[in-house]
Length: 562
Image 1 (spheres, one colour):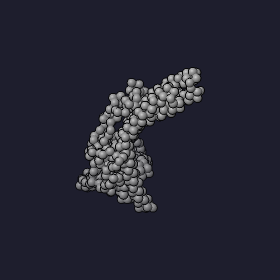
Image 2 (tube, rainbow, N blue to C red):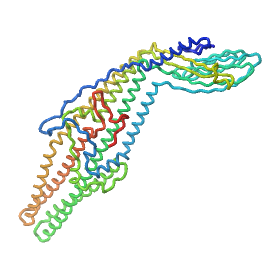
Image 3 (tube, rainbow, N blue to C red):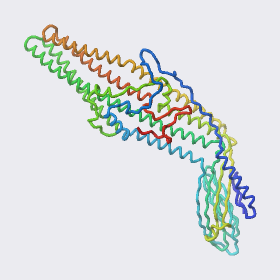
Image 4 (tube, one colour):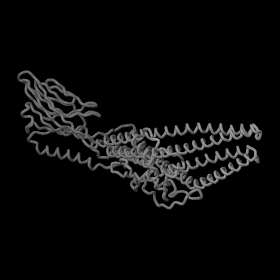
């Protein structure tokens, strides 16, 4: 028998054995509706990469070195940071750093979110099995039927009573009890049920498979949302690469800073020892009546300053070690730490920048911004598709019988197919406003993408400007150090010979001390600038930029191991 649903969608039920032709037509209609999913169109705007909002090449002039490489070569951090000790520290950090663990967890979450969204492209199948026992008065008849209905927000349970009607289905019987299982509701699920009645009491068995409210993606709404989720997954993966490159750069900077502070500690120790000897000398000259007491007090000032600097440098060295331990995520062996900046600085290689500023498209932060832009572009397609009707399909196939032995016989087989079309006829302009909202989001994402490229260009140009002038500054600092050292030697000899006052020697000591510290600071700037170029140029060859957008080296989008 045929039960009419309480819904706007048509329900197609298995006919009697005499309606085989109609049954075939029903199946053909259902298959045709299902095939619409495979030919869904997309209403997302075609993505076209914007032109670079920066000059096509790096700045030129007195502050810049001449660049000869046509493109950025494929490099790894090991080719920039050549000291084996620093490489070991970086390997430790890549395995233990907590920021990287957070980034990895974010990648897993984004990948799972994409899979959740993509699952909407496929129907869900629910398996059901039921046993019902019912009893009734004599003379009642037994009726078996199927029903499909609607329940608000979920699953409804059919009515019970003689010839009664329940939410989700209608059962007809005389003097018996009918049980129906709920239908499809707003935002919920439900399937048609089987009604079995018995006049004298008995059992009812049923098994079935059902798919509920499967949306046929005719206008590409679900595919656009899946594309957006995939792009955001890749954006999250690119963000993890940024964290990785930043971590490697931070470790290199901390390692170099430790080396510089160790050198400054050595200078402070040498200056303090020299100041102690000067205090002893001036005091001896005062006791002999050669020098005034002011010479002793001035020498004591130099000693006090050197001892204060010595205490500060010991603190800084300890703090540098603490920072390295935080970045690595575990204690760092003392044998892996450098003894001086002269030892550490030459181990950081110079990274060529190439000629073409398009290499900035390989920077992970730029890649992330572009994937975010592509995601918002896909969301426009989903918003446009929401302006059109939604077509969904609910179906059930199964067996129902009053005896378990006959449950899987031909006569017990039944099925139903219920396609449904829904369209909101009044939303007060909400759907079109949502389209405008997604278009505004895309405009903002485009501006952010262009801003990231401009920031990358500025950072790279600044690094190249510093690289173009630092050698001249280092050479001048070394000449100054040599001159101040010679001046100190000459003035000290003149003072000991009684030719010049101690004030000249005091000024020479201070100038020499300052020149030593200035050279160390410049050496640190030079090495740190090479680390900065590693950061701003993308650092490693994990991404490739193509005309269709950034593509991960590995098909899964996972970071490539060094």
